[in-house]
Length: 141
Image (cartoon, helix red, strand yellow):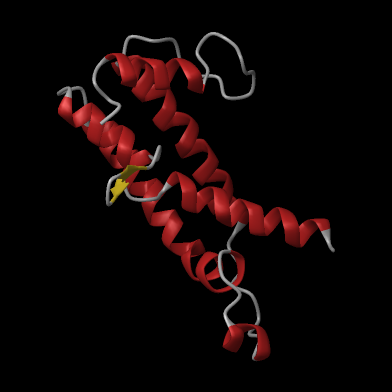
């Protein structure tokens, strides 16, 4: 299997996870919308955080068809009648990653944490600190 295809598919999966709805049925998804909902419930959301969340979710729409038809499910018609893959400008993918980092940092500031560092875990300011804070403030709903 081509590593390029695997990494592209995995990127589509991760984009989908990050932009899943806040909840589905009785299950909560640790996603951008979930974090935004928790901030709203604590009256800590800002316009900047909301705008970046919107930008993140907008990018997700670019990957939705690929995620649903090729990655998450093996849609028979798509496999038997392949179309040329959609191309996304590299700058859009790069901006998506920047938006995720900005979102996390703005959320951390609102929660009076240091900017989050997802590159070093466990480390001060990692995703675990965010999850602990959300649980401590009732974010485990």
